[in-house]
Image (cartoon, rainbow, N blue to C red):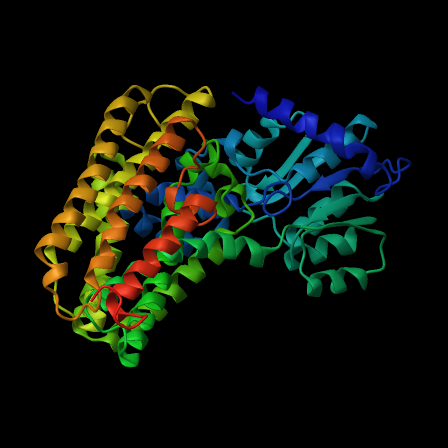
Length: 507
């Protein structure tokens, strides 16, 4: 299972080798010592191990706290003995791997020196053919900072090159003959430069850019549904209603971004084996798990604070959305059919929040329409995932889902049926409710929506069948020219139906 990964790294080293030759002199013969967490790996094995344990059994949090009270070395050993990380899918720093392979080819000794537990460190060394020796924490000593520096100075008194990534590595760099900085902060870099040793620097992808990507801000476009009850409820000309809807939009955006990160944390093993999701910030290691956890807490706090200011109905809607989203991430996404219906329900809760925030009458027709439309799009998402798995040579059960590739015809049938049903329900909404709504200035304009919706749903499913759709129809729609055109036409029709501009149009 490890062999394909080695080949992949080797091919990467060929591309990078010419650039790396100039970075470290070929004349250097001292050992090249590599840190593991944050250097050779773009993640932290202790945090990964804890997440893996809790994912299997959330009650493992209590033993983790008890082990921590006995010391970090004990905690690392207990975690290493129990977790089941797939070494082959961990986010290795390809540039550092290529660097080490190039130095190994020159006959240089490559040493893995890490504060991670020895059990895990040796598994990684077996996976990487270039590692000659492993020095790691052993359940009694936490090999970090001064302890690592003293150990390496004792083993290699004639000097060594050390590659690290954080302030904890400063004591080691003071003992090294050559310093290699891997994605360090500007502060750590300045401190390392004061040591007065030759320095090689490997930059890292922007953490801010990775965080923005992880928050999936483009998905906030889904929250525009919050404004729909305002328009259809006849409050489009009330500024206070727009302010309330805007606050609800921001509230749900913060909550949704936090739950996206929770979902990505929980799905790390599956995402890393997925043909496209492996490039997500957490799965790829571009976004650290501690940073994601901090943002989750801050976003949830800010979101619920705003929701409380909108009143009890809005707070209940946001709380329900959060609870259902977490249930989906932890369990429901693995139940066929129910997973898509749950996503459809989450979209409908956006309408519910809009109704609660603005204070307009409930519309059963509109909520039912939303449920069917977004369930259809959720099935399209699943169909694309199935096809992607088949293309990646992983036919059979879809990782992290309850479907098998053979379920594609059923998923397609359910999805198209739900999409057509949504058009029919919207027509019934027009006939039974919208045209009787005195608050709408030009309700006949809403007839623009059914044919446009039918065209768009047909486009989504045709593109899905052609493998021309990415795994998120909403993200696709905000970048797709025809979809944007149809959305603009529909949006203008809704706005004119509510306001009657220009005056007298189809009144």
